[in-house]
Image (cartoon, rainbow, N blue to C red; front, side, top):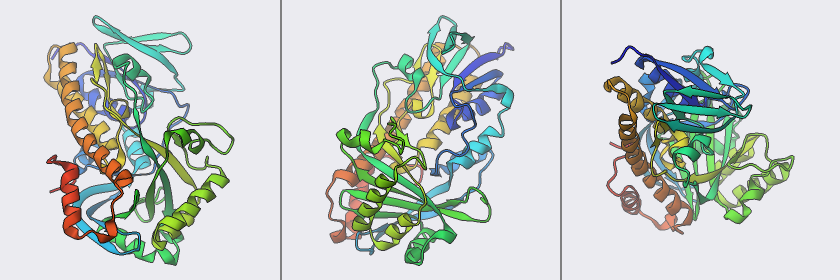
Length: 400
């Protein structure tokens, strides 16, 4: 490999951007991260499922392994169990672990990017103050509404799936007695789903943000159908401001919160409804999908949510972003002459891999939300057949 150091500009200082910096730094790279937010992002996000493969490379993070999934019906009965292997943790803990390994000298916050471009042997980032910085390569890790993606794949737009996720977290000591059986389900086998007609809930334990090694929090998500025409109202906060992708915790109006809790009371068995009522603040996320036709243009590449919109039903979004960075670092290590071709090769391999995974996630979501299934009359063999249809022969990381 040439002794010339490679200048990398990374747009976005969240998980995918930090992972890219972490894994590229040993590859003879000088890293500069530009983050739009003026402050650290440690309090954003909730519970996540990780591919255990990424734990050692990022240095480990507090959490726990789960060994199975249990499906509960609308009447509270246990309908199906199946083995899975996932690592459950909190987004903030992954972020903090990565952030601790990237020097503050490499990160500039409060940086608004207007556009990027690529010419010959350089790529450039343009900022809202009129300035410009040039690099050997630019990596877009700037999330769902990526500015960098508009350069790499200008015709691509994320596709709304027709439903939203209502998210909540409640500490174990705050769960009411009516949720006791939910606590047991989350203890064993660990990953709890409640399937009701054209809707579903997911719940699992994650480490408590204040005491991650000694206390735990129940993380839950309720997926509710919402026509696109109503999405604007759903994502309007308590001050009347509309949001494009999600409502952060604490921003939901009290009227909207009460309306959602009333729906939950009518739809879900009491162990889940009581946990929702015990949750102090709710957040909301519109579910989108899509994978651009390519991840690379010239010397500009995409990673994480900028590269692939992770429908959440296989718990792969954060893991895929970290794996993007790991695979990119391998390419930098293994190519003596860095040029557009090696980056395009990395991008196409990652695009094929992530699209296959996320196609499965999208099928699962559409079936659960719009399949009109009569789960209460399904036998375990019916669930087995349904799952086989969903994965369509594709191997997912959490299955044997």
